Length: 121
Length: 160
Image (tube, rainbow over all chains, first blue to last red; front, top):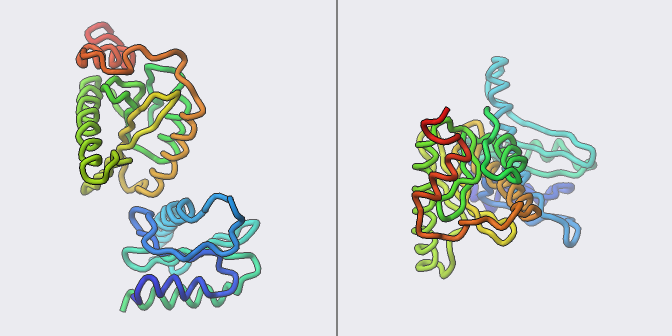
């Protein structure tokens, strides 16, 4: 994988990405993170919670995918009222992005998949 | 997953929530003196007694080690075993320090435990012990305090 700092920098420059993180797949702890874009002053930083819960959710989705005999999940997107959380597994880490509703999701998906693929090579 | 048993009723709700949200297998909340306040996941008083004694000793050692190395006590500790992991950290309620030790496996993660423990800490801070806890400070009778708290959790030993 490219340097982790480079991965989050690349992902965080995609329009609509609020935060990009590399998170430990098993412990849910942040390994590398971008700055939080557009966060309200004084508002709670959502990155730590999002990282831990997204990694946890991805591990459950992996089990569900296995149970359905679909293999390893390639890309997970959680659509919420005010945006999306995207997760891609990359060996021992997961890439997590928090994205606005109007972001170019195709670009986010492509760049996340490319970063994860680079980790497998 | 069994409900927590508590020696002090005010910790029951936050302890249950922590257990459920963080998907902990077992856990004990205690005073730094080793006196148990609540537990879940254990059916044997001897196990809780051992955990209280060890946690109290580990906290004292880690606190001093933190002071020596970092100028302040360590905030939390984590040990990752092959199958199960141990998380230990401090909380406070009504100015009284408490220790928590919890065990989890692959059904949870350190990140998840940390965020729900932070919520647990906040919940405790808003609560107050029902009365000033007698014996919350070291009295010198470690064994007696431990046995009294275990009696409150599991009933007097030998008296079903």
